[in-house]
Length: 285
Image (cartoon, rainbow, N blue to C red; front, side):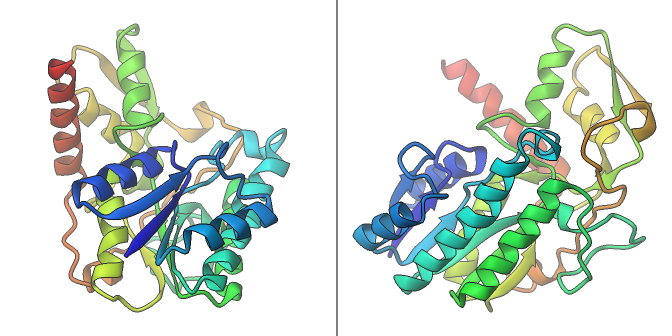
């Protein structure tokens, strides 16, 4: 079985490659310079040459706030047109596709967990583009899994964990929003689930995947910095305005993912494993 990975330099793309290497699986990976997914002819040509069995579509435009203004066009080109090109090319090669989406397809007004069949109502430009990307996958007719995730952190790229650690190195006190509820997702858990869907021959469709347990950004930050002397103080979203609207409640149900036989770590365990691994890597260096 041959895998093709898009978004090779992103935090998920790099995690996928690490996992594929560990499992001695055959894969090729392309970053945006090697394969511009917005170039339809290039995508069709590369897919024809590689002829993959499975496409792991990790390429995305993820600058949520920039997508509201100067990044609006690029956000749409990558997350919608690019995803359509990847889906159509996968369909052409009769490959299975796993595409990654977001909790931002929801408006955050539901009081309990969002299930895969709940009505979508994205409130920012990024969420609208990711939803349009989901529709492009569905309309292509390719055999596909769409995995919605949230609050992603991991070894590679920029993420909330690294931001908190960096700020903590120079600030005795940090303020973090405490009125947005969600589920953090370790890239390792997400990558393992993507491969699990293929191995388990799970039913095609939409799945929600993050780590177990819910938290706020404030409590997430406190857990990240619990072994430091830095004070973490709660603030409201109103006190910390951002260009793009963030859902107040974006907790997605994991029942469908777990029904495939996939065991999901609690986010605190996942964070602990990640930080321990990170410390071990730093010692080696």
